[in-house]
Image (cartoon, rainbow, N blue to C red; front, top):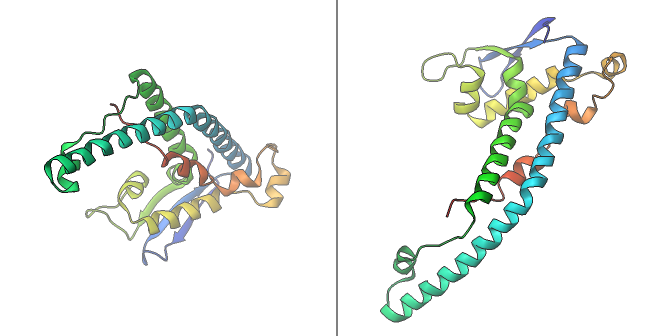
Length: 205
């Protein structure tokens, strides 16, 4: 990505912190945004591929939980112990096939990789040059360290700034030779992907 200028952003969340972002030409930003949009389409496709596995695991999990509850109730009745003690002695035994778990895991790894590239964090990684006036563990953090360790309020603020810097103005969208870039792509990722990822997490039986 060619760099035309650098822009300073003064944080309100962390007063005194100044982030420097690179800003590229409209053509480069359009190409960058199109790449992000393509990744998001791929992410949605991967979620659709994974959904039958999610559904199957949840059904198996529900069956196993119901079976475990019967064992717990029987222990309570037979031995007069508390429910907490009974639950501690009962193992929830799921029967989720290994091959399907591996398929689920591969799809999840690819989704995670693409989300890290195409989400707001990906934009922050690509555009942040440095941050001054803010430290983590006594040193100036990189973008990766900010994402991993800084308070969410600060990283959210920086991601918003990065998305704004990466976006195209209406005039730039009209002048860009990359007309496929949409306002939706420039606005950043939707939250439904991340919401879908939190719904299920199969575990090996």
